[in-house]
Length: 374
Image 1: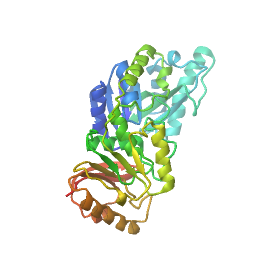
Image 2: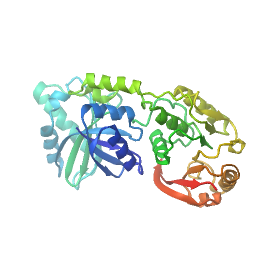
Image 3: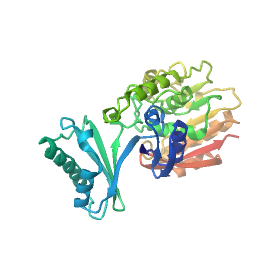
Image 4: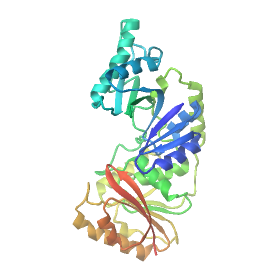
């Protein structure tokens, strides 16, 4: 299969490495996406273990596309729709990109729909209906440089939705972005981990799930199960192997999250419980300044407010000053990673960074910054 994977901006090379480790090959990276080739087993495996992807799309056709006519003809003739889409089944069409003549995604999607349903009517005098809520197939069309790439979307829900987080705070960090941030730190579960402002617990949960090798969402059903060439035996075998790869660490180091807001703290408790990680993560409903630790090295994470979605910028200055002072006084020798969406605030840490990784968090241009606490 030729496959396209979407991912948060800044995580492309990390997703490429993840896909390579899971069995993909001939990998290329683009902005917010990665393309690769794989067999059926690997395709199913990446849905169980890719922590960084939003979605996977299987390319099924590619054809020149200049205008309405070439789009209609290309869609009809490029793929065996009559075999893959029975008329009693539903579908919908998603469009990205544009050409000089096809500039409105809604109009383009209607043309794709018409090409497929006209083909069905000519063969059976019946046609499929459109469903936005429970489609049998989702067809994705991408237009660029007068070329159309048609793909089948492999999952209805985005894969960043793991199933453990019905409770989220006011400015939630997406699970796959959190997982990517942990990959960048290279935390291996051998030293303590602290999240100073853990919110609803996402960074901590993703950290432990990576170490335990937990599949991202074992309960989800996928659209690829509806595909004509779905290999149920291979898929079942991948699920069996995934469930048997779970690692039971009885002696993980201390993993601690602090959250001063009582309501958000309860959300973190609920999410940690749903993820099955209550025995691994210690949550503290208090200010980070109450943390006491005697270990000489470890990893501290922080995703503080930066005055964009949460907090007033001027009022946050003292918070950043307190973070810097507290870390230098209590955690010399540790590594500190902070997600910053506001460089004016991070200077109040009065700490020198050793690495800055550009990331996008909810459309905000951010930096994932590494500090060595002295």
